[in-house]
Image 1 (cartoon, rainbow, N blue to C red):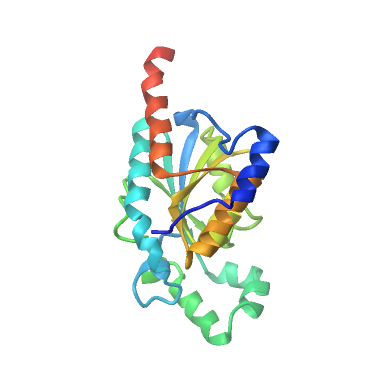
Image 2 (cartoon, rainbow, N blue to C red):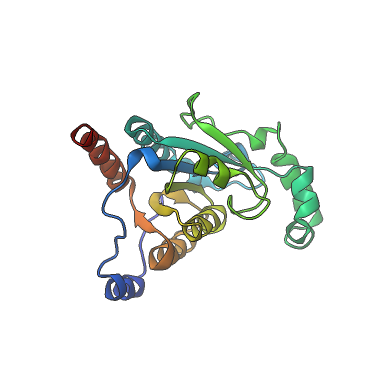
Length: 235
């Protein structure tokens, strides 16, 4: 698990700008989705081409958040990094310039639909009502990446909880775009993972500065439980 920390200068600056580090004081649970980003074998299994060992450590927190979201009336969405023919054809800048030929071939093989690497990590508690969405870019909301935005809008979702891997790549890209699409975004400090604490904490600082409410698992579960308990009084 990462030793998570937001840079003190970021804390000082945002406190000056908005009165505190936290952004959202409450949550409307039935309008909330837990977006689980790329927790697939290709990123998590030992020896896989894109293994991020730290991602295995966050699975209990991810499962706990998913359970709390379901119990509160929200939805859980598992995002799957997908390098199919469409992705390779339409995202040549990445495949032709940011990968060696050998890595390009191995990444495509690992994340092609049906490959072992493309499958969700078996430690995740995936239930029948949960959704699975394939994405063809780092960020799930980028043009041509997926139909996640349309799926969420059709269900009246306006609040996202983001967990997954890698913190500074697919998770950060997804969270940034979500906020600019007018979602309220919670980025989970102990529910995202990458290679090093330094990379992870740089993302937490960037997210807290402008894009997301950065909280831990305990805090988000508490918000969901409070929202659920409040429902009978509002009925």
